[in-house]
Amino acid sequence: MFGDKKVSKSMPSGAIECLVGERMSITGDVKFAGSFIIEGRIKGTVIADDSGDAVLKLFERGQIEGQVQVPTAEIHGEMLGDVVAEKLLLGATARVRGNVYYRVLEMAAGAQVNGQMVHQEEPRKQLAKPEPA
Image (cartoon, rainbow, N blue to C red):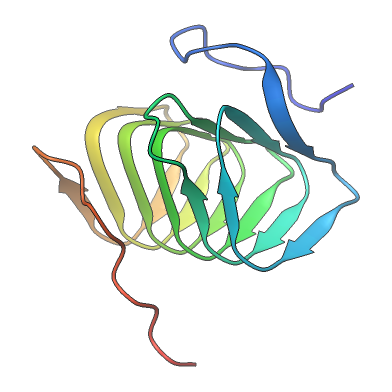
C-alpha cells in the first residue's frame, strides 16, 4: 500500500504523522513532527520541529527538491538539495544531488551522492540560505 517496503529495522518506528502519497505534490516549505513518509514530490524546505524524535522517510518513487533538516532521515528516492541529519540512511536506490551533512551515516551499495559528504560532530543549527536561481 505504501510503495517500497524495504524499510530499515534500525530506524525508529512509530505512528505515521504525515504521508505524501505517490500522486501528491506539495510546493512550499514543510515543518513536521513525528514520522513523515514521502512517496510523492515536495518542492521546498523540509524541517523537523525541535523535539528531536522526527523521522523523514523518502521512498523510492519520492522526490524532494529543496533543503532537508531532520534528526533522522531514510532516503531511497531522489533528493535535489542539501541534507542535514544526525542519523542518515541512504538506501540502494537513493539519488542525492546536493551536500550531505551527517553525524551517523549508513549507505547501501548503489546509493548515489553528487555533492560533498561532511561529517558533523555537532548537528548544524540552521541551514544556509538557498542561492538565488
